[in-house]
Length: 313
Image (cartoon, rainbow, N blue to C red; front, side, top):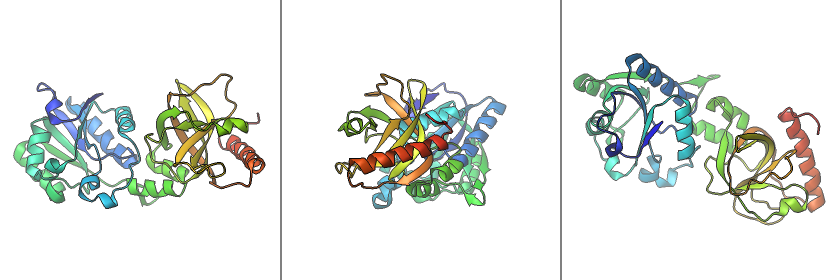
């Protein structure tokens, strides 16, 4: 998949395109409906399928006090968009210059001049241009004037509930990773580099892989989760612990992972790995000593074996 970070990077001879526009934070089922439609339309018309997105939420610039942490990072977004069949992404820097563009300027300069859009696919609540002054109807009018077709995708619901990044974040904040997965269309993940930690886990028989705090992906509620760790094209069953390690020492919030039945010699240091969340096991807790902690970890692992259908050791 081609990736550009400004309209100037799009080659002058780039093909006519079908474009969908959005933040695509999470690439959840609602986003997937947009992406599937733009890919289908591109194939039908022999156009390139393009996702036009942004490097940050507009609130990061316009309302920073209310800006929430994203569900996924830029590298994760690129991978997920490629998996949906997108041919190219244009990621715009959401700065004041972009925020000030009128709807017509946005269409003429980006959709038409840079991307040669012949088809534009958006959600029914789509807004664009200065202070969100452009609506779906504005886009249709501009399409009629300037020669592109507009397709509007209705809101996606699951069990009567609208699929949204906000709702998924709320679920993760409560540790409800299975409910979040239903709206995402896949299990939630973190991706990052494994770094050297305090190495306390190995002293009690549970060596953990500490993921860098610069990892991508929203950290769910502090607690223990059943999941998988992916490294070097291998998949390992794991216990993921999100929190601050209060039993030993309060440290900045992170996620660490204990690989269950790890093969001898497994070394994850300095590798980029992915942690997948399957099921919530328990909330984080502070224990009165090492013995109580070890007993609880053993109980956690037995529950995780059941959750991941691992069978007995």
